[in-house]
Image (tube, rainbow, N blue to C red):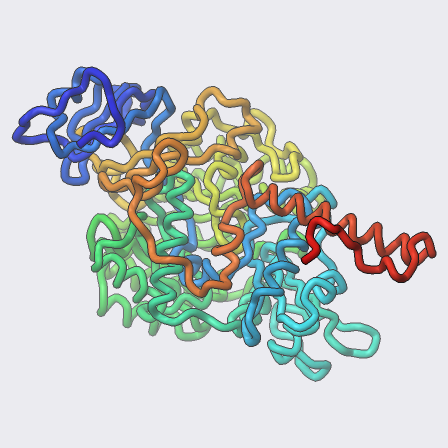
Length: 625
């Protein structure tokens, strides 16, 4: 039965009938052999026909679901090449997301409301996806504001990789006292009496921020699965159908991977995940890698969940933390010894890797190790490898990466941290951070991602806007046109390039017969919408493997049913995730702001004797009993 009535397309008895047909569309296929089309047919999770309505008509049977795109733009499903999706899913429903919120006043109103419904023993946590530059006030919340909004409920607000703000209750819950020593690479800010004020600083290591967050309560098994499914649905909302998980701190293998493994086994993933393994304990990295090599191999898994290699750290000593409000960290003088052991071990066993490297100083030292192994014939030995981030990579380093067959993955961290980078390194360095055009000009594979959820938002359209415009979320233009890319190139970085990083370029990232049926019907035409509106695009219908995994507007109700958000007090249950301009949530927040302003004005009048004490509680007869 057709999903939507479509004139002229009549179901018939067809032996190889399509499961799904999307027609009446403006399809950007990403396939140079046929760059545009009007319809696509899908069977058994794979694209079978790309053409026009007439081409797919013969494949419509009685059981074919037909979706009319109503002339909208359709693109291949997006692939975030650097997303902490596994860790993000385990905590998603516990987090209050400020992604997309336009004012600190609104953000604090959300926090205050959430604190009121959060049960004793739980925390309110705001963990990434926002920047002070996106707020009208252009500032962070203060400790006093958090204390006022939540006197008794612990509140933890993470500000990028730079700092965290805790209220009085969170300091107590985390066990911080005047006797708590500063952790290595971090600072607990203290007042004149020696007591912690509520500010934590990455100086420059973010471990103090993450270790504090790790003290908050976590979800149980079934709630972890539900949380992950809701997070994947939120990603599907923006047209994401694939992601490369970059692992990360406090993401232990195999324990923290069990949830996505169980969902994959049950056929409940709505996003394809290629994952990496990241040694968690300094001094134990070689042991961890050796153990994992005996347990799994790259490409183990299937089209939905598969191992892609090691990283984004191989050894902790080689990690250059990217707090741009602090000077570049000086790494250990001789970290190369253990680092070489790790790389050699991976090469000998056929493991590729990705490597976190923010600064050219680090990249040069890492390349020297790779070149030493290459001289022995051990690198790259047919293995895929890449640098992540690379904001200050030099032309010479890019030449060396190209010579060694490496690739790049860039993220829009500077759309959230660009102002801090500019203040420290100046406009010249900011104009080239990262040097995307220089990477592409050398023929390097350059994939794009977000580095969500603890820095940038997971919304890929914010990253696409940054790639095209060179602007931060605060509107500051950092990268000139010479270091920007056109819209088609940016989209390729979020589709085909990511598939190259996982060796899936023959089946993913384009819409052509034989490829995965991963696509998105967009709310606006990405190729013609005004540049500022790129960041406001969403998907109205997302298809992964021929399954409709997200549906909105005219298509609402066509996607798969999810279990309710649990626990019921979850911020996601009340506010959702990314805050869409004009959404009901934002309208409700605006009403809350108006009420708050009215209450403040009323208190001001009482304090000045303009309102009698008897009128201290506003009375509206419309709400009397």
